[in-house]
Picture (tube, one colour):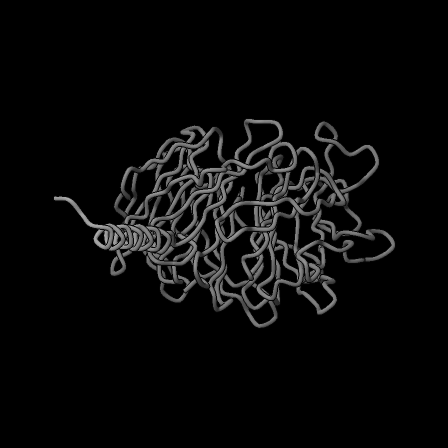
Length: 395
């Protein structure tokens, strides 16, 4: 068939409309972006993945990965307005702020150093006004990994442009941080911090730590203030628990705190009192060497088991957990998260597997099935994951 000029114009217009519709449809299929820190390269890298809303499948964006701004990126946090990503680089003792493009691309903006050394955890309050970071070692003269000292927690105000201000002042002895030690007079007891959680209401911050010599675990609690200053709960005495707590999660109502214990192979559930005090609800078995934890809509809780290379699913009722099942992942999952828009997908970061495993969450039971094409290859040694929703706020 031969088209006249008018027919050609109509055909071209139809094709253009079809292409535009196709691109619009493709863009709507991206429900969020995941940011995955990898440690093999120097500097470290942040891989960015698109999450497909229909299948949960992951695809790296064309310009991924992005340099993390330092060596050994180990932790990440996203601002509540989804405009900024903060990456903690363990070996360079810094926090790098990235602005996030609408296409998931990352743009470095500013860098600050932490008070101590070897930072390992970061969190932001729901108001987006303060960033909290935990250091492995306090800034004490002579303190090193071969001659360790207790860790610390520091607080940074977040400016309107997402940059971090100077650390909030504590006192003359500890001007820029709060120590994580058994008593203020016993700075020689070495406690290794492991994880941190800020309640959704912003009232309290919790940090886990353990004593490697005694296999004793602890939870340090702090109440917050409008200035960012922290007040240790329970007179500064931490809550004793288990042997090696390594991960924390709390619900959206700030009523329950969940603590994963790597050596005890269990997740402990606590109710949070109005004072910030913790009351044990129960302890539930996990797989071997649980490493990370996440909640999905407060109804289901998932724990990655690093030694077993599995994920265990639980239903949640008033803080109590009931086992749903255990599901295979790729090798050595060290982090886990639900999809940024809470549609119903779950992802693990597999350090030794150099990959991410994806699952679809059964909305009725919490059971998991593999997403399309899972696992998804990483450039190497992924350790942390966080994300943002695309095209609207998380549900």
